[in-house]
Image 1 (cartoon, helix red, strand yellow):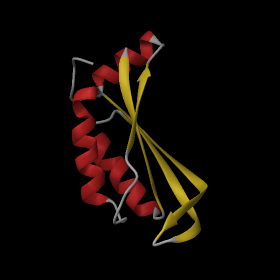
Image 2 (cartoon, helix red, strand yellow):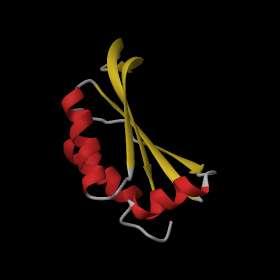
Image 3 (cartoon, one colour):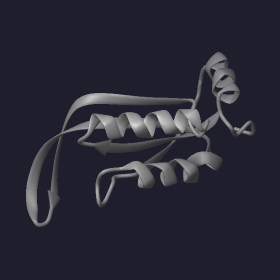
Length: 108
């Protein structure tokens, strides 16, 4: 079964949990993982930064990807949040059934 995985990061655990909880509550994503203790190195305002962040991995359907993006943009604490989408495939039939049962999009 084809799905999308959306990746974003934030420096704030409360923001990460707000995004995660809203996506699951709205059934835009049946599963969101928040991974702590990530160090990101990036350029912002023409300077190199090294910051501790939380990685947020969102599993969603293609039709809910836009909804997920809207929630991220609404709740995120960054001026320019990273929002990257990957195509993925669920290889476990039982997990695919669970995914469909807990997603607002039943046509995954």
